[in-house]
Image (cartoon, rainbow, N blue to C red; front, top):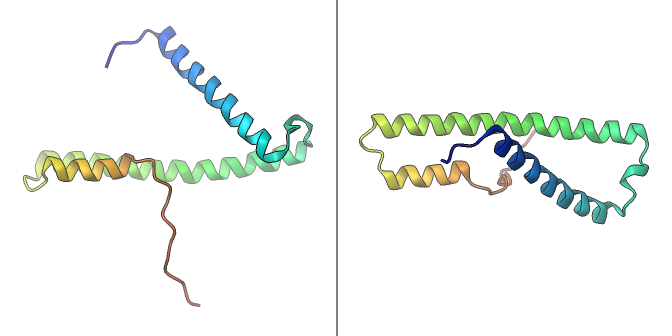
Length: 109
Protein backbone atom coordinates (compact mmCIF):
# COMPACT_ATOMS: atom_id res chain seq x y z
CA UNK A 1 0.00 0.00 0.00
CA UNK A 2 1.42 3.33 -1.03
CA UNK A 3 1.51 6.09 1.55
CA UNK A 4 -1.01 8.84 0.88
CA UNK A 5 -1.08 12.46 1.77
CA UNK A 6 -4.32 13.77 3.29
CA UNK A 7 -4.90 15.70 0.04
CA UNK A 8 -4.54 12.56 -2.11
CA UNK A 9 -6.83 10.63 0.23
CA UNK A 10 -9.44 13.39 0.07
CA UNK A 11 -9.18 13.63 -3.71
CA UNK A 12 -9.68 9.88 -4.08
CA UNK A 13 -12.67 9.79 -1.70
CA UNK A 14 -14.52 12.78 -3.13
CA UNK A 15 -13.57 12.07 -6.76
CA UNK A 16 -15.03 8.58 -6.46
CA UNK A 17 -18.10 9.88 -4.62
CA UNK A 18 -18.67 12.51 -7.32
CA UNK A 19 -18.46 10.01 -10.19
CA UNK A 20 -20.54 7.39 -8.37
CA UNK A 21 -23.12 9.98 -7.32
CA UNK A 22 -23.50 11.31 -10.85
CA UNK A 23 -23.97 7.80 -12.23
CA UNK A 24 -26.51 6.88 -9.52
CA UNK A 25 -28.41 10.13 -10.03
CA UNK A 26 -28.66 9.47 -13.79
CA UNK A 27 -30.00 5.96 -13.19
CA UNK A 28 -32.50 7.30 -10.66
CA UNK A 29 -33.68 9.96 -13.09
CA UNK A 30 -34.23 7.31 -15.76
CA UNK A 31 -36.08 5.03 -13.32
CA UNK A 32 -38.31 7.76 -11.89
CA UNK A 33 -38.94 9.91 -14.96
CA UNK A 34 -36.84 12.93 -14.03
CA UNK A 35 -37.70 15.93 -11.90
CA UNK A 36 -36.17 14.58 -8.68
CA UNK A 37 -35.89 18.12 -7.34
CA UNK A 38 -39.67 18.63 -7.61
CA UNK A 39 -40.66 16.25 -4.79
CA UNK A 40 -42.43 17.38 -1.67
CA UNK A 41 -40.67 17.59 1.69
CA UNK A 42 -42.63 14.67 3.15
CA UNK A 43 -41.70 12.46 0.20
CA UNK A 44 -38.00 13.28 0.74
CA UNK A 45 -38.34 12.65 4.48
CA UNK A 46 -40.01 9.25 3.98
CA UNK A 47 -37.52 8.26 1.27
CA UNK A 48 -34.62 9.24 3.50
CA UNK A 49 -36.15 7.30 6.41
CA UNK A 50 -36.32 4.18 4.24
CA UNK A 51 -32.68 4.64 3.19
CA UNK A 52 -31.59 5.10 6.82
CA UNK A 53 -33.41 1.94 7.89
CA UNK A 54 -31.79 0.01 5.04
CA UNK A 55 -28.37 1.36 6.06
CA UNK A 56 -28.86 0.09 9.63
CA UNK A 57 -29.42 -3.44 8.30
CA UNK A 58 -26.47 -3.13 5.91
CA UNK A 59 -24.20 -1.94 8.73
CA UNK A 60 -25.32 -4.80 10.97
CA UNK A 61 -24.45 -7.42 8.35
CA UNK A 62 -21.23 -5.68 7.36
CA UNK A 63 -20.10 -5.81 10.99
CA UNK A 64 -20.97 -9.52 11.12
CA UNK A 65 -18.91 -10.17 7.97
CA UNK A 66 -15.96 -8.28 9.47
CA UNK A 67 -16.24 -10.41 12.63
CA UNK A 68 -16.19 -13.52 10.42
CA UNK A 69 -13.06 -12.26 8.65
CA UNK A 70 -11.38 -11.73 12.04
CA UNK A 71 -12.41 -15.27 13.06
CA UNK A 72 -10.94 -16.63 9.83
CA UNK A 73 -7.66 -14.81 10.53
CA UNK A 74 -7.59 -16.37 14.00
CA UNK A 75 -8.19 -19.83 12.52
CA UNK A 76 -5.42 -19.30 9.99
CA UNK A 77 -3.01 -18.48 12.85
CA UNK A 78 -4.11 -21.18 15.27
CA UNK A 79 -5.54 -24.14 13.32
CA UNK A 80 -3.07 -26.17 11.28
CA UNK A 81 -5.98 -27.90 9.51
CA UNK A 82 -6.97 -24.56 7.89
CA UNK A 83 -5.21 -24.52 4.53
CA UNK A 84 -4.61 -21.40 2.46
CA UNK A 85 -6.96 -22.60 -0.31
CA UNK A 86 -9.72 -23.21 2.28
CA UNK A 87 -9.16 -19.79 3.82
CA UNK A 88 -9.11 -18.14 0.38
CA UNK A 89 -12.45 -19.74 -0.52
CA UNK A 90 -14.05 -18.55 2.72
CA UNK A 91 -12.55 -15.07 2.40
CA UNK A 92 -13.68 -14.76 -1.21
CA UNK A 93 -17.24 -15.58 -0.14
CA UNK A 94 -17.20 -13.19 2.84
CA UNK A 95 -15.80 -10.30 0.78
CA UNK A 96 -17.74 -11.10 -2.39
CA UNK A 97 -20.14 -8.85 -4.25
CA UNK A 98 -22.99 -11.34 -4.52
CA UNK A 99 -26.48 -10.28 -3.49
CA UNK A 100 -28.20 -11.96 -0.55
CA UNK A 101 -29.58 -15.37 -1.39
CA UNK A 102 -33.36 -15.84 -1.34
CA UNK A 103 -34.79 -17.99 1.44
CA UNK A 104 -36.43 -21.06 -0.08
CA UNK A 105 -38.03 -22.60 3.01
CA UNK A 106 -41.62 -21.74 3.79
CA UNK A 107 -42.67 -20.88 7.31
CA UNK A 108 -45.87 -22.43 8.59
CA UNK A 109 -48.03 -20.85 11.29
